[in-house]
Image 1: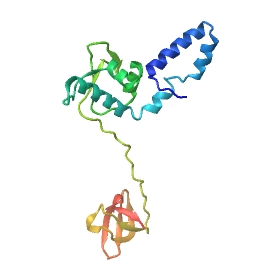
Image 2: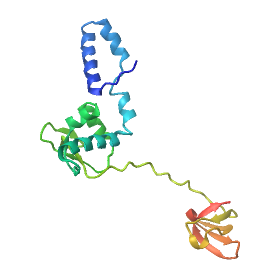
Image 3: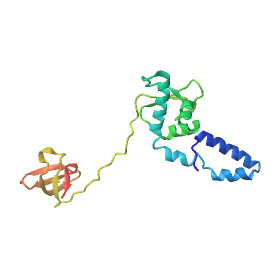
Image 4: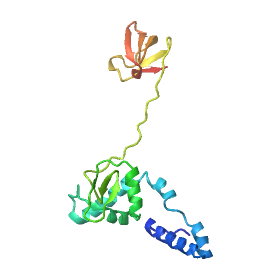
Length: 193
């Protein structure tokens, strides 16, 4: 049977069981080995969706305080951690290791924590964070003299022209086109056929 509990509650349970184990309680020791360690597995599994979850929690809390025009409204770490169901230390660990667009860390009125050599206790967003996906880099194609090629849409005046590579010059080629013309074209405008 699975039960969802917050990470802070799990941490408190683990601290209690550790204390009881040190006093010689065998049942506490058995339970301690059965429970997951929150600092080991959860961080890596949740880090990918953390920016989205943090923004949603911030927006919810800021909206409750000031309404729809909540941009740049500072929300304390304690409130965010409670809303996310994680401990403040875990929140700080996420903030130190996860890049988040449009996030501003601010000194709070309450307790402040050291993050990236800054004493901060609140955070705000200036606009919704962009959830960037890693850019796919086009595979670099290497051409040789004699390769049969087609010009792609990156060079509109020669699109769909075919020809043979006559000379390779670093990142471009001299092409002898089938219509008799000769063109110097960069490699990203060419496709092997």
